[in-house]
Image 1 (cartoon, rainbow, N blue to C red):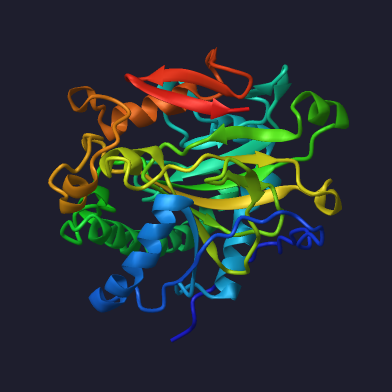
Image 2 (cartoon, rainbow, N blue to C red):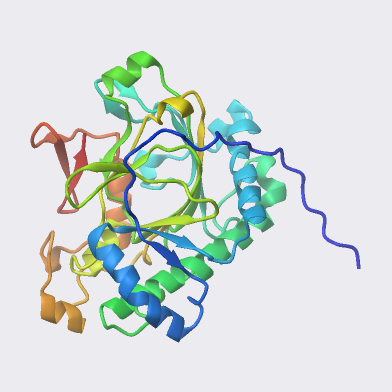
Length: 364
């Protein structure tokens, strides 16, 4: 039987890792070799839960994807930005403000970053089903089966064990959060390919070198495939911004607002931002691969009060339970407003907006 033909894709060559002496965040590295078994997840629970209570970020290694498969995904990730003509890209542009959804292309200069500076970010967002709810540009057509396999792998082999471990940390049944994230259930979990382009020196000065303001993510869990261009920073528990270091074939995992709400503040949605890369990487574009997980659309984002842990330690609320939005309401509100609405300045650093009764902060 002949082997299946793998479509050719040009090799994406990223910038070399920085050699500059940066202040790196000391994030825990979690080995997922045994995450497929209950005993393995039980052993990982203290490490993961400690990470998500403090930093809200961690690395995951030995997740099951090879370095060659990782390279292939980044090759494919560059296609929407290099092989889709502008007129076709325009046809697939998402109506972000009108629909509250990122599905499709987000063009450059849609958002205001600061002092009149517009973003230099393009991204292409695909519903995790890849083909069932969305059409795609011609250049991506040959790769859709691979992308579907990739989203299934990421969902089943990385996201679900994380959700099982987080439930264990709250002393809830292991499948509690998994049931809220059905791969085939209605939700806006999506795969994103994202490309940051260098900015002018004038824009860098006006925006204080910030490419994306400090924020927390909308959904429950974000999975970012590590790539060499250093730009991501997290606001550490001591209040300092530190860089997230690249690790070959690792994923960087962080908690989003929705998991913070569901866990009653037990797990932290960590503030993070993107800024101009260090000097030896300036001038390079930065391609990213993300899996943004959201709970099912009808899930109410209120604390799991039945958790024995929350009964012992207490619940930190950002809104009253009776005002809790659904995942669909919160996601649409945050998506439609980001970078496109007026923020209220709280002080020299913090700006705020209210989304479905929830105060959402941005850090400049």
